[in-house]
Image (cartoon, rainbow, N blue to C red; front, side, top):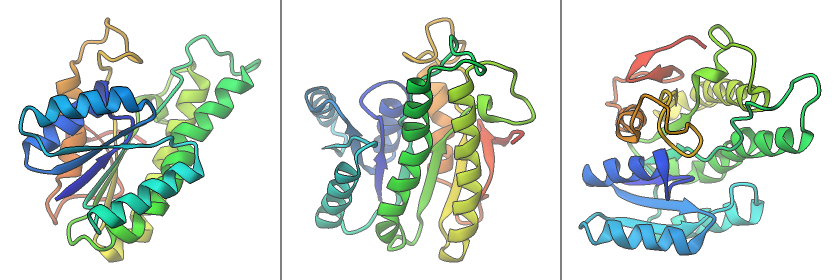
Length: 230
């Protein structure tokens, strides 16, 4: 089984790579900083985990295409796509007078990029008999439970949730399950050290969605394997 994780050389992405590799998945770890990505990959290989690194700038159409071509040449199929890369938990941003730089970067990275990447990799996902797409979202993107604040992050995660529903419907006939996962408030660079959850706990729900059985759900929003409000 072949899996690909974006934003994967630290935090939740890295832990997701580890947990999938420990389940005997071949995992492609992607990121923008090649020196860091290669160092992390070599460390995982030293633990006898089948992990490969490939450069990916999710905001570059050329980079996305190069990754898709690599996956076609190297593996010819993709079983799991985890759209994890995200930016800007913008607590200091004011929705009435926002930083448009932050807004534009969040829209591009948190919403447009996973849409483009999923589309580019669909031919390989359709070759799998057990394909799963996981969009790493957030409770901050819940229309029912959200509180004001982090406007760029929250609105782009809400948009990602809608994209999840759209892809789930479009791909249901192909047997491809598409779900959004909130990992909870996790101790990462974005979440901060005050967060109550470890990366291991946060990644567990992502891996759950990535390894769903054929009778598992699609088009849902989950935390720890349990549905939460859109």
